[in-house]
Image (cartoon, rainbow, N blue to C red; front, side, top):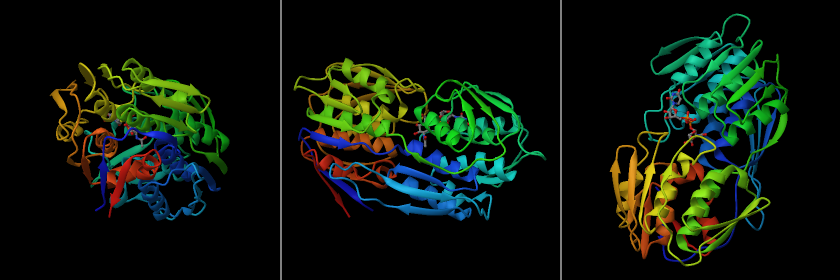
Length: 429
Ligand code: UD1
């Protein structure tokens, strides 16, 4: 298993090109199932999650052609993936692949909408809480689906004549359920409204792609989405939205090491909440077009409290990284996690660097220390791994991060991107 070795203490200086968003790429890939014409995705990040989903789609009979395009000198660019779901051979998504990654479950929506039935294993993915699928099931039932749970599989059957439009009000905001129900509704009979829908930019990106395929979706990006079902969707080419979580992670790495880094090719408007909190902590963040320059001028960061929220609030996917930033801030920061109940696994690993954090239910109290010291640590989930990298970059001495495969699921060439900015980081095979 690969490990990452970091010699910390070097301020990051330079430019980092932001890749396409993993959390947009995955739902976009599942959208290919909704049409019998090719969907071409550009600016695709090179990640194991993308490959895992591509494998699952090819198991279903989707023809997948991945072009691994060379990155430009500054590291910008992405891959191109053509997905052709003209000849689907199966509507069953196996445990073996779905259990690797929760987003694979989302094939349920387009499969049942286009083929009238789907059998999809209950999901796995990062171990960050229970993560049930009740909202997906209730939503599909409202559209007339019969749902059966059998040996770890969800079996969905549409009524004769296809799914029916419905008013679906979700008791809580779910990104994945919004993606899934939006794709299902795109091919249903009549109008569906999703109330209390997720407003994440990735939902808006998926809607933009579906509309380019002929869907009639309005309001994506707000909490009320109206979808007028159409008979058929056609092919299109779509460029994946830049990754706001990658952007925020590198912004925090720059702030933590006390350097100056310009993040290029991003969408600053999608990361407002995190920039606001970072500025309150004393980080300079200058936005110009599609670039953000992040700088800390040597003075110590100040502790700031944070509560994770659904978009446009502070993202749970940056909670671990922000906690790392607070480990060396002056004062005491209270970090409240409201989205996932078990997303503090990084706390014990950060303690290995000398961080002083106490846990109280859904709150972590971070008492700032003068500095961190390098340590051998273990990545527990995708975003927590990024937090450990950030800690290692700022810590004195050597850090070894084990279980790097978590990082490779969601961060493209992290050691290259950081290495370009002067980080002493290498992958040990
Ligand atoms: C997506 C993101 C993930 C991010 C999360 C929240 C992708 C690939 N993943 O995950 O990175 O951390 O949004 O921003 O885009 N819930 C239920 N019942 C359901 C569905 C969800 O109770 O049927 C709960 C979950 O347990 C969780 C909360 O709702 O507590 C939010 O989860 P959700 O928004 O669905 O997350 P994902 O779509 O899985």
